[in-house]
Length: 137
Image 1 (cartoon, one colour):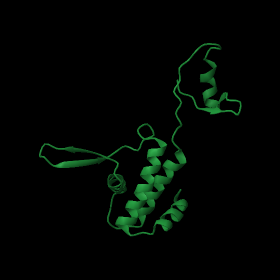
Image 2: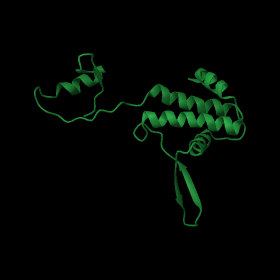
Image 3: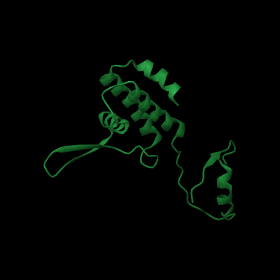
């Protein structure tokens, strides 16, 4: 069972969302349970990343496919898997940025490196990118 909780000042926890309340009611009082505490990824930041990609896509002429642009940016930022195919060629594939496969810290690192890649390859001003992406999400 997965539920979202919030730590209170008195070091107790409360359910974060009403939708999780029914789940937590099933837990018996005075029983011991094992749980794993994980902070979920920030959905707003995830959307901001895609806004960054869309902003770049709309302001460039090299790519005709936004997905290819996104994957190439992720690879160039250093987030990729590499292998050798049957012909002996080295191949790279962008790592998944799904909530399940990347921590918030790793995602923040990726976001920062993607901005650096955009500055390097598309010759945009870093501060302009940061300021303007706010308009896209």
